[in-house]
Length: 425
Image (cartoon, rainbow, N blue to C red; front, top):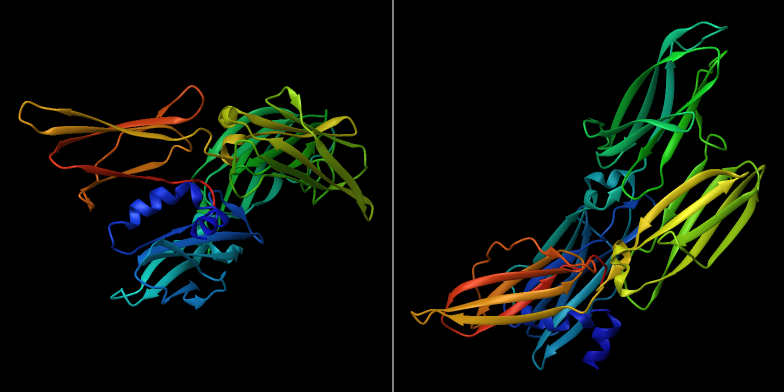
């Protein structure tokens, strides 16, 4: 029964690690949120685990900004005949004002002098998409006048702070900027602007600014300079609310399974749209595309099924979209962010003795992924002082390996390896 419950919770691969962690007897708590930032209006999961406890008489509470927050029924997992751990999950639908919010997991039990608590700031997982505006000074240019103008791209109300801005002239990139010095707004978001000076002549020229933010599709707006320049910028290819979005699953998956990638677009003026998916720029993926009308415009959704393989740590998927035979979207997304346990992890110890009888022990952790791994040494079930560990080395297959030496041990060592998975358990 206990084995079935661990598997149902998705914690079976980490059971030996968690048992080692709880064997010391002192209750502890961990709280993990989503690995990737998520845009507003989307729910994200938070997972809380605590233990070991000597009995089932415990309670788990979730608090958002100090107020009670709904969560799933806590699951008790037997560790041995008289010891238990508990897991609980809470979902939070993110909003822009959550830049200042936090979520707390609190566990109460008779073994504790005071409750176990752990808190995560929601700003760590929140992604606020900016609004764009392109302005020109002077605002009106007539006739065949040759004069200099200022084009300013306003990127407003985004979070977190860092974004990349690209300027294009007639579809050719002319400037790339990493905008890290943004202005903080009262609501916690950021705003930034950049001005480009250009000469305007009688021939028409199209200028656009595009913003890249994490793994989100680029967001752009444009303006045309020529005989007469309009006062306001227009969003690229399809009107004011034209929108592209490419996203994958929130959870990591193991090799041998498949994931779904989804592209959506809105406010297109015609239904002449083709969406193509390629893995590693070679293999065309199986996909399902739908085009449907909303008033006088069209929305597009396309999903691709991507089989995951062990060597996909270095793989990518390309989504290529054309509207009326012109490219409107072209983005590559890496599969390593969706892959869990690309290779079976190997942990082994080797030892050597010095002339004085002192033992040196080396821990070898091989073929793990993702990169983040934490090593804890225990001597007779007592945690030794944590040591600095070297940066893992990248293997040819994309996995990582690590070696760390513990000097001067006189007793038997028990090793607990805590791997920080970039997935929700």
